[in-house]
Every structure is written in structure tokens, then in C-alpha cells.
Image 1 (cartoon, helix red, strand yellow):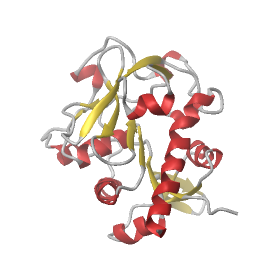
Image 2: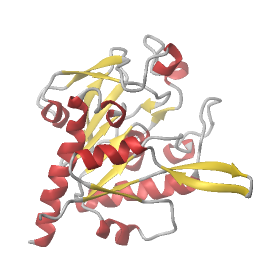
Image 3: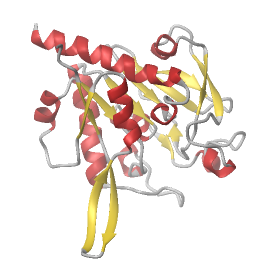
Length: 251
């Protein structure tokens, strides 16, 4: 049997109160792990921790930066925290920003989802809108839960740049996506190329200019792939490129 590629996934911090006490936990939605398994990989969870980045990256063939709370605005030069910015966790910020930088240095295949695309941009020197509706546009809603649209169904479409890695991944010039974010990319890092935008101009997809396979999307394909199989494609391509990366390391 061929060895399946190992994909490291970053979790979200959460507080859990039980009868025997309160606990600070790290959690990951099963949709992420199921998408990796469906695409042929082995998911492992990488929690925030001091150091260990190089050794952690030695353990994986690919990386998935998941969704979750907001990045501390200080990380991208904002001196004020918007009233809608939430869920800041310094340990998670530190881990993911360093993972992103080091993974890119090693050319490790990396898929960045929702918060993940924002981490990718900030790690490479870009900035964010702390609140799309308050700082950029109210033309369309990026919070489909406010309109009763289920997580596995699309909330709007995105236009995909011709010839982009994203176009190659989905095999389409337009993709119907779900939407659960209130922040988005502002100034795009110089090492990234915009590969998808929403109808209001919100940046929904980016990719690295020179690395083998680094893709960021603002939507949640892991929530959609069981109902809309085209959304398994980012995970399939991540696994395919993780296999190539592992093979290159062995050779």
C-alpha cells in the first residue's frame, strides 16, 4: 500500500465548562478532517505551542490553515481594534503565522481557508479589513447565516481569474461559494496574486506567485463538498501536491 500523505490542520481555541471544571480546549470541525480523508490524506491536528515549528513541519506533507476567530490587528499594523473584531488568541496567531512563513520557505503544499487566507496574507506582509460591511462594502452579505442559508449551500458566486491555480483547481471561471466571514484581505502581500473576487470586489481567493501549491480561499469548501462535489477539488489538489512534495523529499 502506498503511504498516504499527512496533512497538518490548525484548530480553534474554545472554552468548555463541565461539572468538574472549565477547560481551554483546541477544537476542529469534523468537516475539515472528513474532507482530507475523502481526498485521500491523513489529517492530524497541530495545536498552538511554543516553538517546534521546524519539527512540526518535518511531520507533515501538507498544511491546512483553518477558519476561526480574528487575527490581532497589531499583527498587520492597525493600532485600533474594530468593535466587531473578536476571538483574538495570541498563541494561535503566533503558531499559524510562523507555520505559514516556514511552510512557504519549504514549498510545502498549503491550503488556507477563511481565517487561513487572512493568516497567509498577514504572514507575507499584507493587511485586512477588520469588518467588510463597516470598512469596505455592504453591497452583498458575507454572513449567509443571517439570511438562513445552510452552511453547505452557496451564498454568492466568485469570479475566478483565468489561468490561475484556482481556475485549474476548480476547472471553472466562476464558483458558487458559501460565506461566513466579516473580515477580508485589504492590501495584498506582494508575493500573492488575487485569483477570485466576489461581486462587490471582496477578495475571495489568492495564490502564491512562485511556490508550487499555495492556495487561499475565503469560503469554506469543507462544509460544501458532500453536497457539491466540486468543492472537494481543493482538498484533492492539496493531497496530490502533498504526494509530490513527499516524493521529492524522499528522492
